[in-house]
Length: 433
Image (cartoon, rainbow, N blue to C red; front, side, top):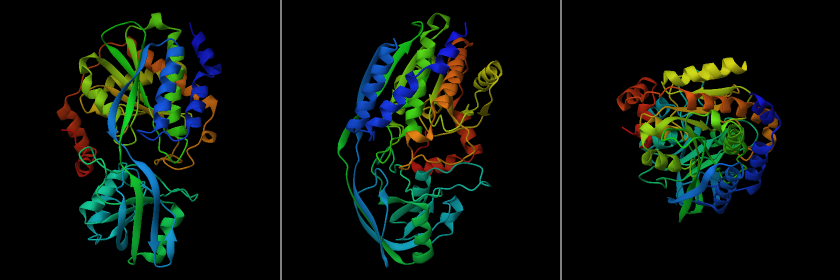
């Protein structure tokens, strides 16, 4: 009955797929590399016996990196453009806005200036503040340019997209710089005039979604999801090669117990997550919400041995996670709060039960993620296999569970207000209600 656990702990299916993805290189949304990753994932699912593994394509706003620079009174500073920044050049006073908390922008004189903002969120602050919120708050305060500096040492400039659903290419130039460059800019040039210059292209492009099914052909399904795209500057091992590799490993494990599942498991691996959750938003809009028993989304998994699961106020999901943790004698950190980022969110925003599965490694930020250091050497097969065993148990538990009640969208909106997300989501144009 439990042979699949031992098989998973010795399986190479997930790790081999992770290597396949990172070896592609650039998996930026809309790129040839993303297409290669979608095809490789489709083929891996098909080879494991998943039914009807295929790719559904859709058009997106593309973005192709060129060169970028910051010119200061003492010369240029190394930087990288943030995806979906517009091309162009802007000059203005450099203003250090600290951690980019809402009050930091209220107190700053940013009219016509270039805002310098840290990627950090201090421990005393109750919630994570996304890069895009900091970008749009700076713009609303009058900034003409945006410099996003890492808070993690190591001379690593952070990436991450700007732009919104209505205006995919952001309004003003935006670049990322390392912690060390950011500290130097603040120390030497705060208040001086600096220039940001960006060369990039913004052609229309094509992304896609991989779909496949395992288990019985029921109308209701548990959705097992991840995203295959990654930023162009790195291998995207943690974010999110490991998530998709976990999905592949879970499919292999579940295939050995098809007959035990009461509902089908629909596997959906999204493209274009890093540029606005485009694949998952499209998917959430097209599904019958009553046919979705639950969504289990793997993103950022593998950084640590303890899984971290956000349950978005669905008590039944927390109970399922606790049952799996007890059954396997392995801790899982459960967060009942909302997490309005990654591919589970478009489903939650429409009232569907969803879990975001990542890793609790003690780091509130992305760690190596969104930098050139998001590479395969940061991960190990043991952790990937352990996580896959727990996710397999969770998916199977949800597939066999009683129907899970939907949440009213008004209740989700109220939670966003209570957890202090609402104002920031309105600033970025992400408020879904």
